[in-house]
Amino acid sequence: MKTVALFFLLLGSVLFAEPSVLTDEPVEQPQEAAPAIVPPKDPTVIDNLFSGVSLALNMEFSQLPDRFYVGEVIPVTIKLTPVDTASGDVEYTLQNEEGLRIFSDTPRREVREDGVYDTFYFVVESSSVRLPDITATLTSLGRSSDPLIGTALSASMLNPPSTYANVLADRFEIVNYKTTVYDNDTNIVVFTVKASRCDIGSFRLPNAVKQGFESKSPGAAGSQMTYYAVIPDSEESISFTYFNLDKQRYESLVIPIIVDDDTVSTQSDLSPTDARHTELKMAAAIVFAVLLGTLYYWKRKKWYLYASVFPVFYLLYVLLPKEEVCVKKGASVYLLPIHHGTVFEKTEEKKQLEAEKEVGDFIKVHLNDDQIGWVNKRDLCSN
Image (cartoon, rainbow, N blue to C red; front, side, top):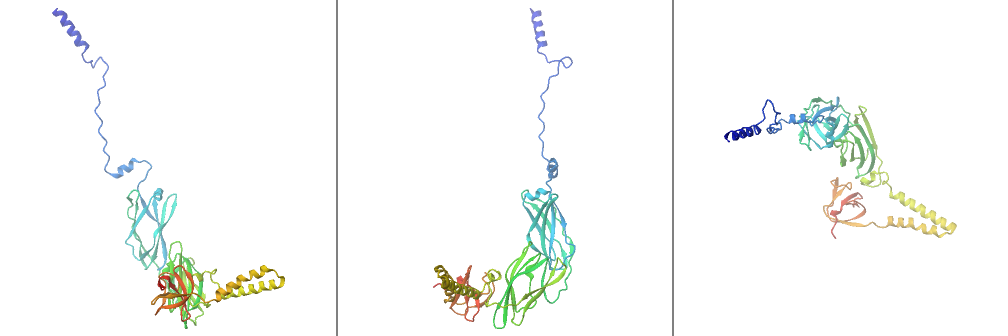
């Protein structure tokens, strides 16, 4: 029995034994878990993981003026890459400039195949110029460029004639003008100007008793102003010169003095469509009334008579006494119907003045000295 038991014990050990490394097929062993990949701390390594994608914001000067003058508005163009920078908001930081004044805070943008071109405009204020150090930040990603260091440049000084009006421009055009009597010894000229690449706020006539801006809107794309000048009534014209940057020479402009009936001009009078004289309207109404009356007398058709009523009504409207308004003591009388405009008189006492028409918040009034001015509605009496 012992021999049989020993036999079965040996047989079982053979059946359940591990396979031999020499004769049996190898059994796959369980592999240890792979170690976790730790992201690199260097951001440049992350950038290299994206093939064909550039996250760097590069900036360089693309176009700089090679010759310019003190007082000129000069463009400075910056090139940004990559091109998809245009799809995000770019904020610029400008600092350390010298001899320059920023003319337009918002650059003009042009997107091309090779990059984004942003152009800033500066006013040159001295002969020694240093462009600003510029940094661009792409706000959507919070990524900034390396600072673009400004270079030193030199500006030329003009030697202007005595009639120089202190402006340089590619184009400087007088659009409209009007002259009226200001007082017994002087006239006032009001004119509108359109200009391009011009620091229009520096305009000043060389010879004027009194002058100033009634309105101005400077801009890189174009500027416009409404200007007034009080000059002696002996002057037959206003002449001045500006420096034409396009033609590189001084050019003269002349405004002839043709005195209008109104004592004080209005801004709307600068438009040719609004500069109509009441006398011409009255004369036309009289002609139409007489013509229609004659036709009625000749052809005896009543509609001629009915039509003649309209010019007669207009004549009555013009000839009837004007409405009066009560103006407070100390009220400002403005030269033009413009907020923060020129005040040429203040009422010394409460007055009843003849009112002519309204423009916005202003009423045109006739003063006791036969002058005409504009009073803000807030300076009218409450009752």
